[in-house]
Image 1 (cartoon, rainbow, N blue to C red):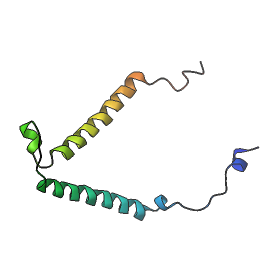
Image 2 (cartoon, rainbow, N blue to C red):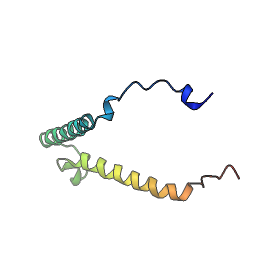
Image 3 (tube, one colour):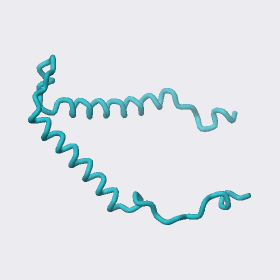
Image 4 (cartoon, one colour):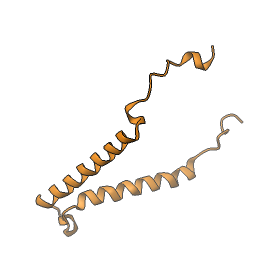
Length: 89
């Protein structure tokens, strides 16, 4: 059987295929992050270090940690990645 016959028939576009819906998700996430940052201004931080008392410290720290993990993963990929035909040799 061919690969075409094994696939289910195309049911149309999904809701994430429409650019307007993706834009709506981005704007919603940005709004949620902004609201959490504003709420963070009114909550008293109980940190042990002076920098932990900065109003949006934990959000910024999480973002910087995320960026570090992404770039570390890219560097690690260069170190451990095998050639495409590694197992076929």
